[in-house]
Image (cartoon, rainbow, N blue to C red; front, side, top):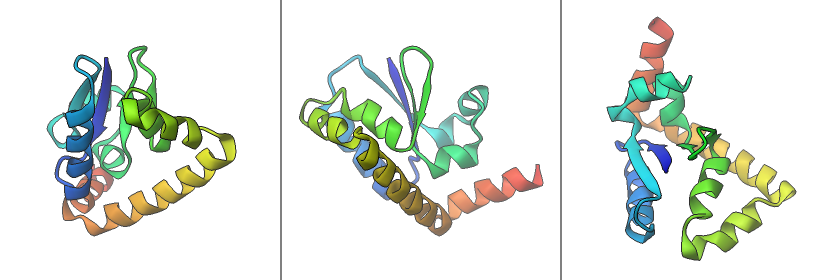
Length: 125
């Protein structure tokens, strides 16, 4: 089973995950809001702040995929999204997509109050 760690307090993130959940075959994914499981993230070496900043997914073998690689892992399991996963996996396209996603993720993280609170808690701990 693939565990997808997403920011359930982010409207955009929640909307996207709701779409994936609606089209995903049963028994493939475990959808986990990072706000509800900081200890699960910590066990993987991921802080809550990191979990809020970028999408993370753990595959059935226990490997953690981050950012665009997490999307590719998800999309490969979804019937209409497999073609996009293959395209985004092409080396130059993957690199450009990863850079664009990280820029967007940084912008989103800076705008959301709960993300900033998690970042502050991390620096004071």
